[in-house]
Image 1 (cartoon, rainbow, N blue to C red):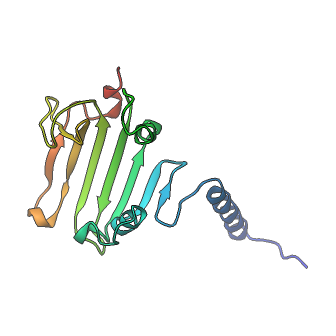
Image 2 (image 1 turned 135 degrees about the horizontal axis):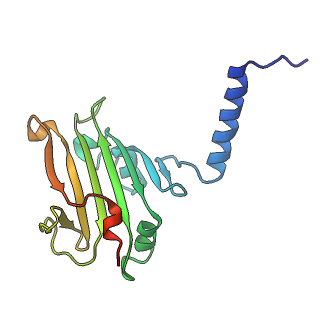
Image 3 (image 1 turned 90 degrees about the vertical axis):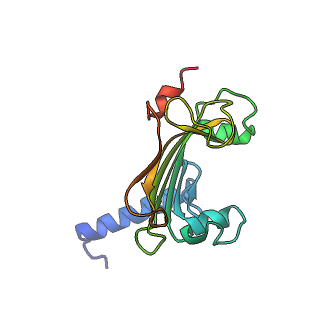
Length: 167
């Protein structure tokens, strides 16, 4: 009545059970968000759709792969509209449009620092300010629309998130 399962069959069943239990415990939604793990794994288009926008809201970057990671403090800040500082918040965004996308590859590291000025105000550590209270620690990559080569728009020193959480 029952056949002996091969190792492949056993592994397949185990993976299927693990995947279904991970989804039931708060896995990825249809757009690519996993709020439990604090990760987004999708495309520019799926990020647009998750925000209620048109699928092409980021233009030529819409088909690019996008991975975003953030910590619990980022969620707390969003929940409080960033009105109860300090925050030990960070996010990491990686774009990859090499296969079937824009051709661009880009990486950003962003951390909450408190009031820092207008967008793109240079910061003493080599980063720059965005959204009034966040520092871009790293902004680097390749984009054919900018020309050949690798570009660095921010490379703060130190470049790790932990250095900013001493308050």
